[in-house]
Image 1: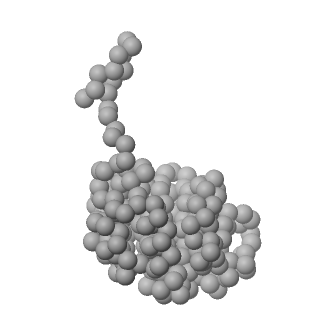
Image 2 (image 1 turned 30 degrees about the vertical axis):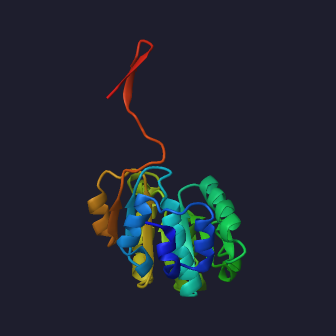
Length: 220
């Protein structure tokens, strides 16, 4: 699918950012669009690393912010990843929207976040913000959950599961985009999330599997 075919369906800033890097959408991105990404459908996207999941998230949160005049939240598991995403999105969209990084004090409601469009945070931080009854939460129309397979993690999993459950109850018009490279039960998870399942195995670099023994590699 050529990116020009969706020019009228995505904000101009997104089209400019994407078309300056490539002309053809990757398979997972085309599948996501066909599954209702641009119509506000919930999606569970299961594709390999570097296959284009972040662009799917970008199209969703930028549409919510620029077309619905709403806020969006991007949830990541690690502070380091949150910092990385903040830098990446600031470079792409910092002139168009206001982007905040919120990974600090769990005892703070951070009133400054009221003035930002996209809030990047960890699940634990968003859980804390919800417990502080932040007034801007009702303005959120798009939530991205990166590395959603961590629902199965004994440490972070319970917090993330409760957080998603609370968000779905509080934000009835929320579009949920869940991303992961590895999920063992994608159909079950998609059903629990109330999401369309997008699966694809395309990757930018071919992955060959083999066994190394005695100085030699035997590929499957």
